[in-house]
Image (tube, rainbow, N blue to C red):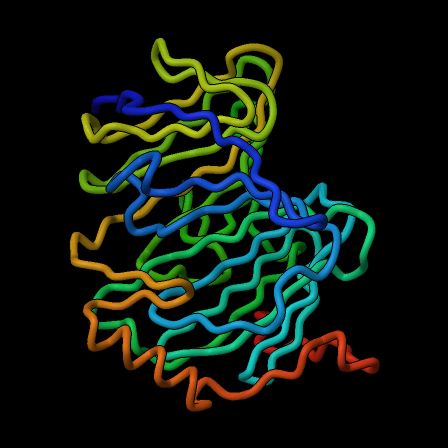
Length: 294
């Protein structure tokens, strides 16, 4: 057994997008191939409707509302699903060959805080049938061990499997660490792992990662150990095996090549993704609990 070291650390600066949205984006420009199979991970604070109904194709979009967020999100898609994403819940949209969706805080004013996670698909699954899955907060598996409290958001961790089978076999955990705690996990040899610290600071070997920064692991071992640096910490960790295949991205579309990219664009423009009336134009809008996992 060998513990992996930290390859890179970067402060994730907040970026304001208009009056209602601030994001902290973990992108390949900061960490390169170490993010694969994730495309981008955005930690956001949103105070009201920001994006109208919009398309996605060729990958999956996961929305995880942090448990401490004062409010949740509401989400709808062109497949007919309408859900409230409560604090601590997860909503996964497998865009596949194309879907429209819209999501926003359930009311304006308070800040909704969570992650939007773009997960790449293997080349032969980009045009799979679109669908959505929803996991309630109270049904999310949790683990408490040696001062580490872990919520298994996607995938599996220490023998606990999340409700939703993650696209591309990725895993996402949300962990709170008490003073003196160490978070450990065995890894596959080719598994990429990175994390963002939300509160406090953690250490991996001699490297210290503080709140507001993200770090990637090198591939020099088969286990990770993240220990609290001082008086407790909170982090969200992402792991997955890379696809190691060519990928083209244009806005909300991710494709294998130009032909597929044009097919996605044409499908959206010609209505193949369906139709979606904005939430604001539906005064009687209400969740229908579409695709909620019991």
